[in-house]
Image (cartoon, rainbow, N blue to C red; front, side):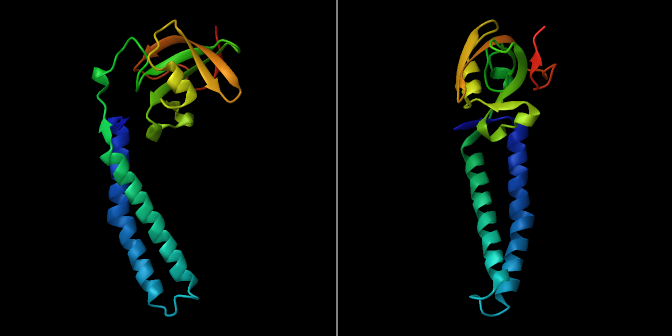
Amino acid sequence: MEYLSKQRYDEIAAELRHLIEEVYPKVKDDLAEASAQGDRSDNAGYREARRNQGKTISRIRFLQKILEHSRVIDPEFLPKDRVSLLSRVEFTNLSTNARMCFEIVSPHEMDLEAGKISLKSPIGAALMGKKVGEIAEAQVPSGTLRLRIESITNDACSSGSDARPAN
């Protein structure tokens, strides 16, 4: 079971509708057109149309599975005093004194450029359940990061997701 924000759930549902209602009919038409051109063994257009059909069907099934096994999470029922899904966490990397801010999201919402990290990532998992002032230790490929929680909010990060020196 995955938990998604309402926004991400709606985005996935919209992509699925677009694939089913617009993309797949076009892919079927392209395949029928390529198939009508004769010998399929030497028909590059037919092979390309089959590949596109396979990719489209695969993406549709993937999105259907996500929606089938996901639930929309209501932020009102999440704890405000500790890091949880949809929390925006500002923390300091104690070895570099760099301060960062990220929103903790499901793996399907992860977007580092937008300041969103997965709760299943090493840093996200280490932060989960911690309170302001606590130290989280994250095992990352370069070693262990020690992170001090500075704030937990449901508002946008004041500094964005970029690392910045602590004051």
